[in-house]
Image (cartoon, rainbow, N blue to C red; front, side):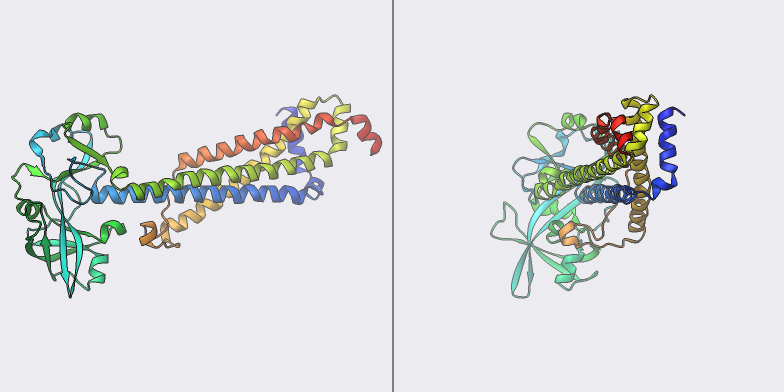
Length: 392
């Protein structure tokens, strides 16, 4: 153990130091570090958790991207693509985990004396997914739709299909409700009726090699270049952030909010540590004077107080991390805090415990706080030992 660490440990373990004037200030500074790291860990875990949860919901229900015709809209795919022009076998090896042939048709649902405009999504799994299997005369409706229309599994559902060839004379189809789904995405649940792709193909008069689009679910480290190579230039590739721009712009705000919270709390914690260090230095003036008389230089004395401050920072981080992990663990296990899914797209506060991010955050707090302590430690060089010892 070198001289600076030895002296710093003696200061920290000194009983009179623990009951000194600076003791309450030091405790408040440690508390600010604890509160700060708790808020930062929770903010980061929840902010990134919401993003991850929403991304997974979209990926599970509409894939990560769609390959479709340039003339098609978000929920209308009247212009088909030719599947023979796509090199889908080139994608199935290492790039994708799910592949759905889909079609989106605008439909009208007649109820009582009014009409409701919906979208019929016909799909067919080209690569096995968890989507429920439906026959031609079966559909799956959302929990939201079934609730507002007082419908349940087994009930009949009549839909009027409009196509480009039949804009004035709709095709009427009667279905049986097979499943009730609930994505928690209001924009999806409020308008999408899920059905068999063969029904869409018959409605649109498409041949066996045509589809409204291909929805692709990607692996974690997919080769996007391979996807672009497999799709001809006359078809467009739309990722979810482009298809659902408003929602993705909204969840991207969590990034800036989290970074702002982290920045502000580091500054607040650093200022508190600066105050604590200044008060400690001023309180230990006689001690500093003695060290200087005995031959210690300013750099060595500054190191003593910087080690002192670093110890307090680490102490606050240890307790702060422990408290935040306990709180986040209870949220993960018991979903204590619930949310309105119509606003946040999730039923309860999601948590993403990414330990890499948490470790990087702790390292950033230590580095930033330590750098902020260098400035007040310069006060040591301004203290004259002769004047200090005479005044005492």
